[in-house]
Each structure stands twice: as structure tokens, then as C-alpha cells.
Image 1 (tube, one colour):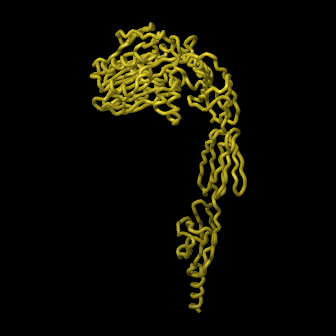
Image 2 (cartoon, rainbow, N blue to C red; image 1 turned 45 degrees about the horizontal axis):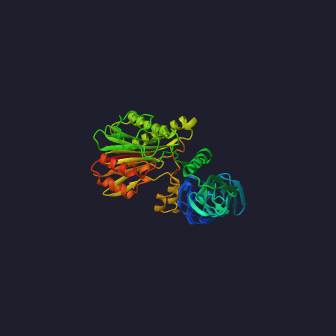
Image 3 (tube, one colour; image 1 turned 120 degrees about the vertical axis):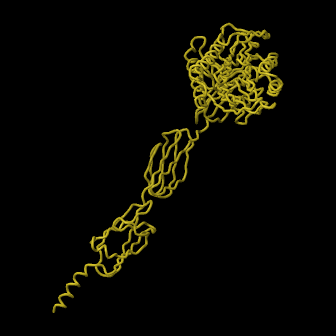
Length: 531
């Protein structure tokens, strides 16, 4: 009897423990991570064998499955007390993905088509089920853009779309007809002429029988514009063309600037060299200004050339461990150009004398240059009143120290690095002709003789912009800064030849001026440093 009672007690006691049950876990899709009571167990599909120790601490097991891109799921099951197999199936639900749509310009209409359709305007962010969608972005006066995208679970897809404007139509007529039409300096046909043009600003020139007329116009997307130009019976002087374009560009569109200077009487300016102190400048026109560094390695001349006044300026500044060189070419006519160029070099000198210290970093030097250019730009604009309205200036600068040059440039004055009889580096002009050359619309030879080569696109006081360059120097290198009175009239081969033959900076500078004076129609300025 006692044995029977003991056997019954043991049966009841041990019947609460696991004999060896199994829980089969299946997920759709497979390969999800399976967790039992928060502890990783295996990847699905898998069989969970009930451990004996679980019965001591748990009556219920919590089974959770996780898979990237899908919402996590869990189920609770009782621990079996007898040996058997239980099957649990999890049907996983995908997480949404995110679609970001950005357009340039913004505010475009968006249609997203997939399982359902979504609409909105850019910039737009949508939560979407995974899958493939067609995205269409449309804006008035622009070509619609349509593309296919795949949205992945729990991922963000960013779609950046630059909308292409629909061309505008430009109708150009002239009186008389059959005149040659130049658009931004490129011959496009004869009047009357219809052109399909990308939106933007254009300089239109019509010419016939050596007579001209010009204007500027902004072409808008999907619009038709009409330009009618009357061509004078007699030839229009080129200086007048320059004046017209300057007024149109400076007072109207503000994209291109003509380098307008007060014309001379056609005779040469005096070639007598007048030496003045570096810190003294006069508003009175002088045949030439000369500057040189303390050690004679840098030398500069600014000559009046065939003009009534000199709107060029230059700077040679001795710093504790470096040279600062600059050439500025003023524009605006009357006395405005020389005022603008003077402000530019004075501001450059002021900033470096105040802030430069021996051994400052190259990054600091670049910041000084950008600060000086910006400050000069603001000062010129502030002083551009009355007869000086619209004045501006180019400015090219070279900071030279320890076998390196940091060059800054605005406009079409240039910096050259000449080595072993070759130009190894040169700044790029901010000019209409340079833009045409970059686009392959004209050749190098055509650029050198192009009638519109004096249209510049950046100038301090008018439209700010500065390029920075870093040049590695070697012993014997020559750094040359020049206004366009030199490089527009003297071929680069001649410039390199004179620079290579000169014994020192002064001989090179004087040789370049002498070469330019018989042919230039402008002020001419050069600054030379021999490394």
C-alpha cells in the first residue's frame, strides 16, 4: 500500500516536468532570427526542444521572430508536459520604405504610381510599401521627368531631379533685312531669324555693310521673344557698340560687362618712366607708375598707353617672409575705372598689412585674399555714385612664399607661370569669350582676335566672384601678372620669349611694355617676379 501511494505521488510530481516536447517554428519568408524568452535561439525554420530547466521558472514560453525589413512578431505558448510536437507559423509583414523626392526648381507636381497613386509637390516624403513605383515630376515651362524606383523595406530612397526648362523662341528681325546675327559672339544666321534657345541671357548683335546694332535679352522658358534692331546706314563705331552693350548689360541684365574706357586721340602716350613712392598715388593721369620690391626680385610698370588717363593699377608689397603682387584694370569710363582699381589695390594692401603675420598658414592666406576681394567689392559698390555709377575693376593677385604661389583672380587680368620657355600655368578669364571657348564654340585663335573679347562676366564692384589657385614654384620660374593691354595685343609666344630672355624682373617688365606700346590701344600693366 505504501509503495502504491509513493508511486502515485512521484507520478504527480514529475508529470509537471517536460518529457521532451518540440516546438517547430516556421516563418514566411524564412531566415528570420528566432528568440525564446528574449534569448537568441536559431534561424527559421527551426525546432525548439523544450529544456527541462524551463519548467522550473516558466509556465509559458515567449517566441519572437525578427527579420530585417519586416515587423517583429511574437507568440506565447504553454510548456508541454508530455512529449509532442507543436507547429507555429509566423507570416511576416514587410516594413514600409521611404521615398524622398527633391526637384530643382522646387514646387513641382509629383505623381507616384504603384499599388496605389500618391500625389504631392516637391520637396516630398512618402511612406510606401516595398516594390517598384513610377515617379513623374512636372512643372510649368519645364519638360516632365519620369523614372522608375524600387522601394526596399525600412530603407530611404532619395530621388533628386533637375528639371530641364523648355527652350524659348527668339525672333530676330532687322532693318534692313539679311543682316548677320551673332548670339553671344557666335554667328547664327541672317535676319529674319527664328532661334530656339535655352533660357538665359544673351547678347544679340546684328551687322550689315560694316554697320552694327546690339542689345541684350533674357530668354524665358517656353516663351517667344521678338527683337527688332535698326542698323544705321553708316558704320557704327566700335566704341559706341561698347558703350551700348555696357549700358544694356550694366543697367539692365547685369550679366556681361563691357570694359569701357575713355578713348585717346590715337597718339602714343609718353614712354618716359616716372618713378613715384609706393605709398603715393595721384588722381592725375601719368605716363607710367613703377614699383619694385626691396630686393629687386619683383618689378612692375603701369603705362598709360594710348589712353587719356590710366585706369590700371598695381601693387608690390614686401611682407615679412613673402611677396604680395597685384594688377587691377578699372572699368566704367571717365575717372571711374581708376578709382575702382585704386580701391582694389589699397584694400588688398590694407588687409595684408593689418592681418598678415610671419609664417601664417596657407589657409589663412586664402582667407585674407577672399576677405580683401570681398571688402574691395563692397567699397567699390558703395562709392559707385553719380558719374562713377557702374564702375568696377579686375584684380589678379599672387602671394609668393617658400616655393609656392597662391593666386586669386577676378575678371580678365591674368597671372602666368613661365618655366623653361613655356607657360605651365595661367589663370582663366572671367569673360564671354572664355565661356565660348570652354563650350567649344570658338577656337583659341578665334578667341585671341574675337571682337567681343572685352566683355567680362566678373568684376569687383559689379558681379563678385574670385578664383583661387595654388602653384608649385621652381628656381628660375617667372611669375607675370598683366592687364589685357598686354595679353590682348601681344601673342603669348612673344610674351614667353621676352620673359625667358630677360636677365631680371625689371628687364622683363620693361621689355614687355616696349613690345606692347606700339600695338596696344589700352593701358598696359605688368608685374614680374623672378623666383
